[in-house]
Amino acid sequence: MTLALGMQRMARMRVLVRRLPAVETLGSTTVICTDKTGTLTRDEMTVRVIRLEERSVDVTGSGYAVVGEFHIRGQRLEPRGDDHLLLALRIGALCNDGRIDYVDGRAVVLGDPTEGALIIAAEKAGLSQVTLNRDLPRVGEVPFSSETKRM
Image (tube, rainbow, N blue to C red; front, side):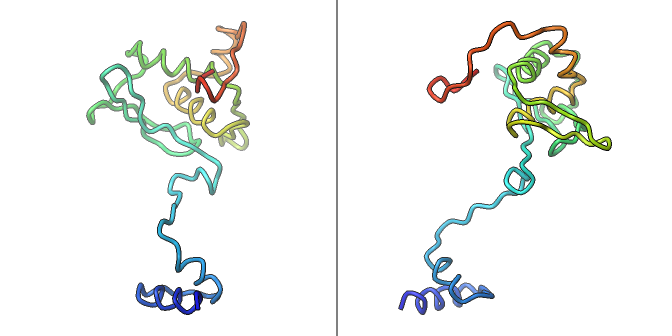
């Protein structure tokens, strides 16, 4: 009975199904979540917006390509000329256990996709994680916890 009702519902929505039992599951589905960014399909995340005080800085580019620009209200922003943006990007790169390796000229992030996105955002601004770690070595660490939601 459930299969027949699901089939009717799917037919009303003009859905084509290759395997009939899938109709039973899809017939009762109310929400389908999709992934356009590549987080699930390619295990990548991308920083799109950085909020600083009352400003919102848009970041272009996608995935782990170290190509992109920073914009405020559509105007290009040079990150080296914005101390607050540089500080936020430095913090994101330094409070981070991820690492970037370059394989055939392509950035490959080792570690959590969120941490990878933060490292790539810093790299887009010309901040090398290797250089930052050398110049500002970690002297201690308070590990990330779900209670404080920070590292």
